[in-house]
Length: 58
Image (cartoon, rainbow, N blue to C red; front, top):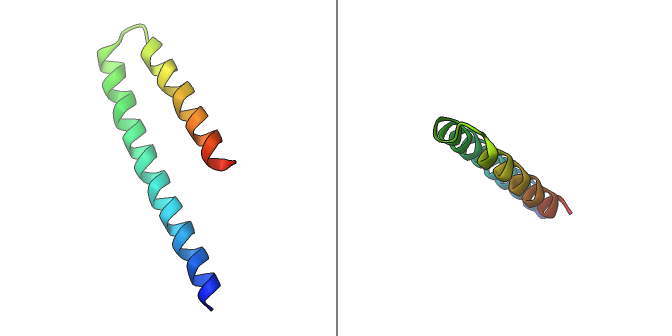
């Protein structure tokens, strides 16, 4: 069925994108932790990520 194939493609694409984002986020967070002692930059990044995810999920 063509429709189910399209659905699978979109789901796989979303999972890959999500894994990439999580991986990127972990790396950026680790870098920022090493870079900023006060952690303010990390909080800003978390807010930005949450907003991005909310927009994507809508």
